[in-house]
Length: 485
Image (cartoon, rainbow, N blue to C red; front, side, top):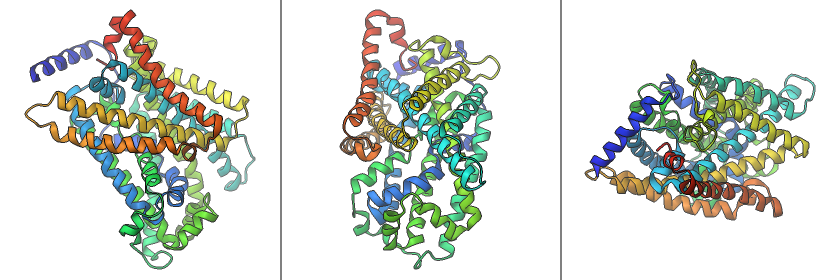
């Protein structure tokens, strides 16, 4: 079995060598910052943590974040073990295809493309709102419609996406460094001042960990790690992928779990274990910024308002880069027009995929504007839909990894990662059930809109599988290439 696997890998390597692909020179830190920027740390701090405290397990929220980090780390072990054997780009699309076959693989490819495209649209909406708020409140400037700023963001990200990823990674590194400095300064200020009533550790007691809605806490917690697998997508664009990708992947998971766990704990202490629930109940939108102003000062508060935009822009740029690479890989396989799968001769970037993505985003955003969808509803529903689609992808990839590694194990070395992935699969199935039953909580959509959004994501996934069956009957050569095979 190992001989057959090695032969397959050799054939893939040979084909890759004869086909021009993406190139880059990112190191460990650049890759970590590129992926973490997609997560939008300041967006999470200002908007996500207070909601998690209110609707999740309250004071026990930091532990929920840390436990979700452990679950994601278990899945990361399997992803890295499997990707080291496949040695091909494609992210979830390639991994799921290798583990569960081309029909499920193409369905997951369509789901992943939709997932990250929705995340991109939500970042544009949030960025437009955040920039308008910063201009009006901080700089006393004029009010401008959110979609104008969203359009500017779209043009800039599309232009940056035209060039080599190393250029975008430098931009993301600057923005993310500012976000991390703000959050670290806040955490240190709260700890140094002793919080509202002394630094307490109630968050780590069993009665608080299992208080409130633990299931909702885990549902929100898993969403914090969106994009962690993107390290694999950039395989062809990093230095020494055998070392860079594993270090960066574990670094991303550790950084996100530690950063959000500690910041949530400091946020709770900034009000006190008793008062924090009243604070998020009364002022959910401003709970984080009010705490920043109290502990870190007026300048930090102004910086946080501005950074909500820069964080949204960094998120949009990272989402654009990731989504463009899914378009590129589907184009290279012939699922989408093959011209999308051809890199730029000079920049070795997915320039055509980037341009097509920008045009598609402009059309969809234009449709939202014409339909007069309220910007706040637009962001909430798109962000919730992204989280739901991401959980579906995690379920599929966890199962795919377990199946692949057990089928292709060598001397038992893959059994541990396979078991870890299958254990994560069981947990993620529960999370998916919770996400479905709490879809209104995730998106704010009810009634017909709720059914439409659920139908969209599952319909796209099933459409990908149906297309694979069609290709198997009518275009065997394209079918064989599904999943970068």
